[in-house]
Length: 559
View (cartoon, rainbow, N blue to C red):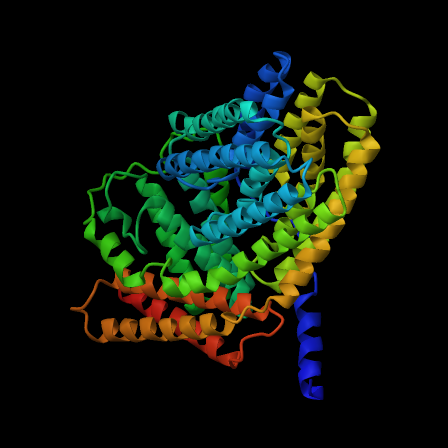
């Protein structure tokens, strides 16, 4: 390799592997209610099974209850559909894994163990691809993989397949019920939390002033667009002309956030400060659980034309198109390859719980680029070390099966409460959950479990990092170039709309431009975190982004 090429490789590795921000904490609204719902989904089905003398079935019921990991921020209608599909997938993973494990007996046959490791890798890659394609955040693909791997490794006979599948289905059904039950108490709470997040993000942008970082503006834009999606509207809604489907106060608030987002550059510092304070106060009001059914405002409204949203969706384009699928194929390939190699090494080393290596590799590779993989590796290492100490303390107390199940439920609550704030904190509680579930199904000496977990974690983390470094994302540059062209085209249409008002509605043109600038920013960030960054002048995306926001401000000013 030429000297210049070696220097670029070293510089790229240093930039991509810098674990900056791994211990940063994020603010999340509604975490307590979500964590409580997850704990109830785990405990209400697992504890009765343990009391009935079937701790093995309780393990699979817990796997089904992991359905609650998904759809955290979705409105109830969409959440019901997503959770129903996820429950079916989790149940299918337990059914497929159990059938495969009962057939191949991986604990007795090395060949069968390799086949199970290969099947686990296929599930991991497919789950990663689908979760990224549908934008399902959270642990997502790792939980799907974990359900399949546990079932494939721990099913002794074909007669256990049906009971295990039924237990997983029961856990998934209960998780679905608890996930949508809140609609009876606070039907608009997901929308309120989404709007509150948008208000807070825009307030942060206003407080940063003219020197706000691109990432700050990007975060505010994403939050505002997500609030509009949650309300089923396009920006700006002009709340007085929208239908009674949602609280008009919410619509006016998100419209105010949109106006501040795209037009704040023209405001004086004093106006920005005052607006930021008002937005934060409104956000605090929305996040209070008291009076969740009480409307923010009672202004009457009429239904707006429904074709605006459909037209916007057509103009924005399908995010699941061929180009996006090609971009997402590389992270999925990394996860499948890393899971296969880690699982294969665990088989060669005759680890008792070899799937832990595969799950650790998948957890590290559940990322968007090399930089986030390195961050996940550090978080996984720190969290696993602390989690092992916690698991050792629990196992040393030698609790009975019922007490052990109660501890798992408590850990599930803590996991879901903190994992959205920081992944490392989540791993602190995820690690003992995995160990205690294994001990609940098949009791084993604590030292043996800890040793297997350490070995599996080390193998998985190292393999995951190596896969991220060696599998080059050759579509990163293409994605940036495509996003840049798309943003420029959307800006051109916005300029035409300003000159020729008889064209598409400003709301449709603005939405297309906002979505394009968000995709440009995400593509640029993803490429910057790879070992070989996109060979595009950094000033081009920055200039296109600034021009887009200027056009959005002009469209809003005319409206």
